[in-house]
Length: 463
View 1 (cartoon, rainbow, N blue to C red):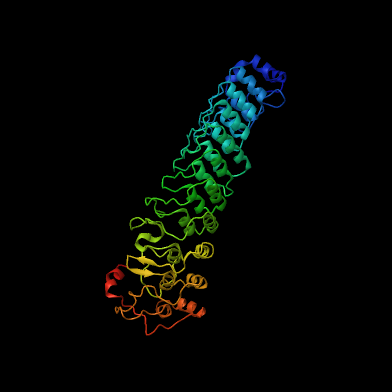
View 2 (view 1 turned 30 degrees about the horizontal axis):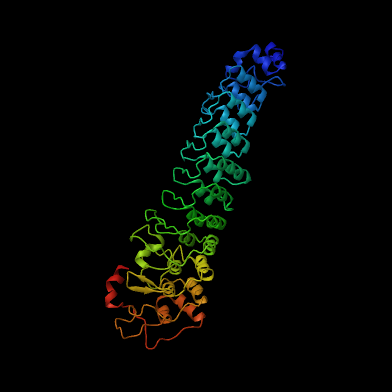
């Protein structure tokens, strides 16, 4: 439009006068070449986003021109009108104001009757948008106006509290505090995976600050997701020791066992998750909190895929033994000269169990109710000299085979071989470790035999 247009000239009088002369402009879609847009103080600033279909209300919010917005609303502009273009079909003024922290514009829209809980195509409401983009003042404005704090319209089912708990940075701690202190937000409401704000905080915020805010305002720290994992399991999995400390300080259960319906982690307490993930900092925090990290769960469930730590019921066991045989499958088979497997033994976790928890390095494990294996024996049998070296350095018995009956060659009166004899046959690398520690002893007349005791032949065949 020409510069000397009477309508353009009238913009110099300001938005109120312009719309007084042309009130219909408040209800017309505007584009970059609209009479409402142009240079100078009397115009609604043009924006690259002013595509065809943008309403005057939306245009004023996008431009951050509150005076124009007030005039447009007073002239009859619709605070809820959505853009009609394909790209932003479900965007609307209050959502935009909230996402960009434009509090003055948001308040004008609210006063004009904007829908506080409308959602866009992704399910984002103005309160969710203000939370996600870190605008505390916009969050306060929307809450004060009565926005629903518990609405979950996104496909993931996230609420404002969930988005705040799962984000990082001081501004999100402040927003989470505002939401929690409002008394209107359900701090235990879960998303589609049954992850609560507390579980999101445990996974995302290593500092423990977000979780502390939630706990202080009464959140349930023992709530489980759809697989039965608790906040403590999440903290252990992500190796967040400060979260473990926060849970302990607020009295959370640090020992709950995951049901066996959870593939791969059935039967796991938080410390078992920390051990397998080699989350050594979280494991140390659990030890400091008084958790017995040496024991397996009291009820290890049925045999079969999914049982935690290689079918603990089939093997019995303790966590030291579990670290040694990790990755070998449900039944570590009797296979001499075994090649190292991937994943291998959990050496970092093994060191923590020995050095920090003082777990018994000679505690035996009964497999199938008959075979008695000690960690050293398991390390030799499965050709894991690195694990054997850690056990030997910790003072484990590297002389005597615990399962005397199974390795007596079928003669109960015959003494079993020493571990050194056994290692020479099944794992030369392990035998080298034993020699390195200088504690090889030749058993009195004992010798290793690959023929199992007759009572165990069937079970050996199964293994």
